[in-house]
Length: 239
Ligand code: ATP
Image (cartoon, rainbow, N blue to C red; front, side, top):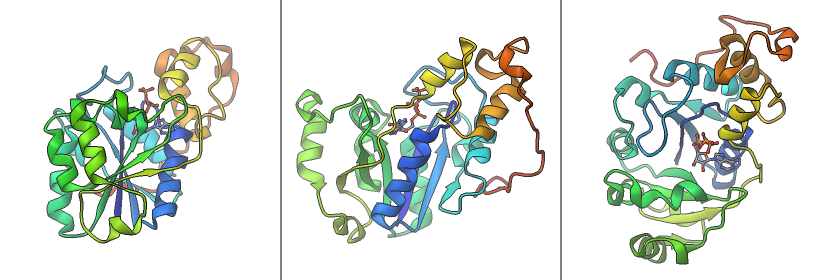
């Protein structure tokens, strides 16, 4: 089974990385692909550019064999509709089960996504807990409620039995972290350390992202650049 963890990753943080690993381990997935969005269609546009976000993601997962980066949305450019990504993936993976991981916040907005009704036909959906969000299906749209009612399973064995079509709720490590919070800390001249990998924080400082100013007193901390040190784990970067 293949896992898909899509995100804007602006920047990637431990609230992405640990739940991705949790899901891979809990469901016994063969691989977990982190897919950075080139141009996320359903939200305000990212602050860091696509190349910077991909570089930060590579720095974060570079030495983790359980997580891989799939840069198909970066290569495709244009609006990063998840349905397009999943259609490609389904073509490539034949009948292999594919699990799309969505935090509760993302799942509750699924019915706003482009051609969203096709998504459960292409993949299983793994809904993960996220601090600050309740999976209150009564507040969801009638269509999303129906999807949940008809497709929800509690036994993960049901996912392996077919390529797509089921929804499961999966507990993950509770980490109250968001990229918004990290961007705000950096812009306010405060350190976001311990919310994200140090390598990502170093890149933020090196590239002056999110309003990190050269005059900021944090810039006195030595930033070690290690060009060429990150192993290229991107699946399709050379395509
Ligand atoms: P932003 O604050 O810029 O909106 P974000 O931190 O929510 O960003 P995204 O890249 O938008 O991160 O999220 C990608 C996916 O990761 C979504 O499915 C989201 O639910 C999930 N996710 C993000 N942060 C957490 C977290 N702390 N715990 C669990 N899931 C998370």
